[in-house]
Amino acid sequence: LDASGHAHISYMGYGAKYDLKYATDVSGPWVITTVDSSVSVWYRCSIALDKTGHAHISYLDYTNRDLKYATNASGAWVTTTVDSDGNVGYDSSLAIDGLGYAHISYLDNTNLDLKYATNASGAWVTTTVDSDREIGSYTSLSLDTKGKAHISYLDWNNSSLKYATNASGAWITTTVDNSGKVGYDTSLKLDSKGKVHISYNDEWNADLRYA
Image 1 (cartoon, rainbow, N blue to C red):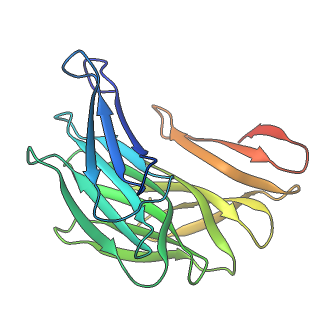
Image 2 (cartoon, rainbow, N blue to C red; image 1 turned 180 degrees about the vertical axis):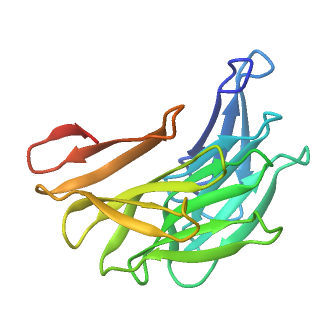
Image 3 (tube, one colour; image 1 turned 45 degrees about the vertical axis):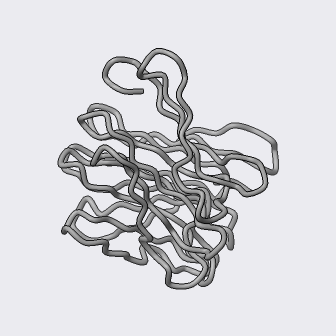
């Protein structure tokens, strides 16, 4: 939602080709726009708004298996390939910092690693955050007041919930819950004091869990 309470939604259009679509009720009635029809996209995409209410979307270019990014900050939609190094871009989660720069967490499906990308330097820079075997699905990213990233994600190899942050200046990863087949479908938010809150799925017991 933007500052006026209007909704902004990114999603996969279903048809002859799976387009990236965007819907908003900013003008009153719903207006639907096709953002990227040049490729087929994966159904998991992530949207965030900057201070001016412009939309930013991260998504998987399923045709080329690349991480892509789209924004209408210039007044028209512009799409960019962020990472094309292998089969990358799954389960992306995007946040915009106070200066309007994008931060994206995602799965590198070639190496089964957790990766992070940002254009905070003016150009896109990608980093492998966690490469401890099969890791990095179901990512969820939020930024603190200093623009540092906090990411929750699944450790496939150990069926555990993990957490990573660069708040100290370097990436630190932590196992949050390894009490079974847990860590699926994670969602992470920070409170006003910078404390981390994560909801996630316990697959074995079919339970919703919170950390």
